[in-house]
Length: 119
Image (tube, rainbow, N blue to C red; front, side):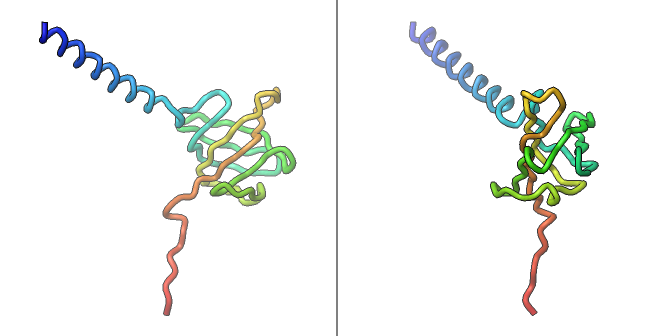
């Protein structure tokens, strides 16, 4: 009887451990139809950007100065701050029939910050 009880507890612990791991793996960092995470910007102009998603697929996404919000470290910046080579997270406008970016978050890359030294 005691073995059966211990086996049940062990099975419940294993199930809890694997379900938590599965939730973490599929959680907030997965691309969806309306969001691309860690996409690399390969082209920027006044009307659109082109990004390569983590899947290797290139997406052309419409933008404009009024309806597209761009952020770096939580601060709003201009679309002009977006550069080729930037890693971005793009949220698409689900109500727009085009692939239109309603928000773009530019990731800060550790190697892009210059170290300063005092003479």
